[in-house]
Image (tube, rainbow, N blue to C red):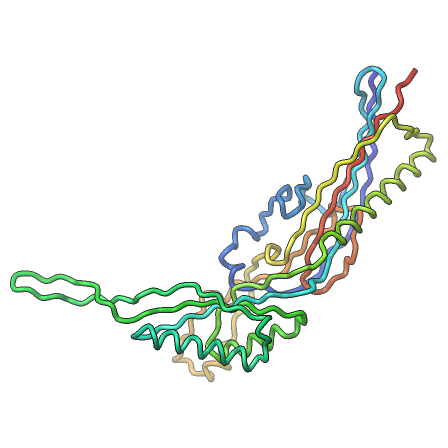
Amino acid sequence: MKKSILFLLAFTISLGIFAQGAGNWTYQNKAKVSTGLDYSSELYGGFEQDNSGYYQTNTYNWSNYGSNDTVIYLDVKALMNVEPDTYILILGLSQISENLETCFELIDQRIASFISEGEINQEDVYVDFISQTPIFAREKEKKIFSKKYVEVPKGFEIKKNIHIRFTDSKLADQYLKLAAKNEIYDIIKVDYIVNDHKAVYDTLRKECIKLINQYVADYKTMGLNFEAMYKSMEETNSCTYPISRYSYFSSYMPTNYDPITGNDSEMNLVNPNEKINIFYDKLPYNYYDIIINPDAVTPVVQFSQSVKIKFVLKKNQ
């Protein structure tokens, strides 16, 4: 007779860590970080998950493969929050001028002033040339019997990006202030770098296997026999960066422009983004058996690991 025994394990883990650190790139990718997330996507390590609640259920199935063979699967998921070793901040700027030489000269002066005032080492900064485009104006061309508009070159626009590498997160504010001083306002994004991915995955794998062995030992105390003819293991892993974990929300508090307007009621400031806000929304913990460094305050790189063990038990005589 074929039998099926189902073991259910439920765990409850509370959530609630707030952090910050993104860039304008996040706004351009709103659809990817909205609250309607795909929990089976790569961001979640390909795990099949349901966001209907904050309870995790692991199901271990005993099923018969043939008349005598019994196969058991044990599946464990682990998550580690890892603070980055290095940050790379990308700033964008542009310059417009009537001639190309002046355009290059002005934008290079702004970049050099920013790097000098920030005391940034040359090996930690890279200036990426983005584009060089002409600017046209439409002028009316008059003829005896007709009029038409023609495009006439009036100047040039140069765009460049500045890549800055640093290890102390507190330097970000300093760089942003100096950037604004040099008329550099476009904060494109911040990359978070973890140097040793292998060490993180090795730790997660060991913790998963340790928990599986604990399950096996616990089940033996209930008289369940795990003497297998052979075993096999499947594992998946993923790495989720903060840039993909920012979600949007609308602010209900009105913006106070008094410090800017000086209480001048005739001045009407327009800010199309005043109600738009984002926050760091890390991977939820309720889908994992093991959480390492769960109370990280800052945005972190989240490494996920899933280990699944297949036991083919000895045939029943």
